[in-house]
Length: 207
View (cartoon, rainbow, N blue to C red):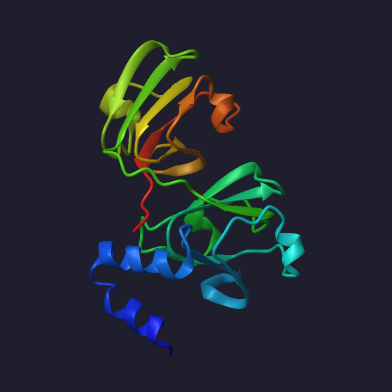
């Protein structure tokens, strides 16, 4: 065990300090480890930066468990950050022991990138219709069920004004989901969705 590993281990109880030191050691993106088998077994791949083509890493394209050391990451079904998205963040200590933990339909992953962090106070505006029109709902915190809280389950445009968010098609943070980084999304297709259904939304956890 080297000195950096010892230091990072000592500061785990202080998440803010630990996050700073991890970024200094691993780079601004953080660190994530992909495992071929469930429960963190089998061949592994450590990433500290974006990877457009996992096939070039000479590892299996099967991923059945993940450990997030720091930061937040989004995996894609296809190369070049295309297709279905899967978020890996620090929401539940960054430990994903099986594909069900990230709402995957299978174990195929082709590309991975770091999620962009925004340190402004969390703030997002959801609009019922495209082009930022119709009923507007402003959020500052996690909402596990948009329908029960705001009588809302259709969102066609979004303005992210602070923080980084992830929107799920189903309540309680389940189903297909989409990363919403700080910018304007004029239509649901801008965040990669095929329809406007959103059942829940939460802030991405980076530490």
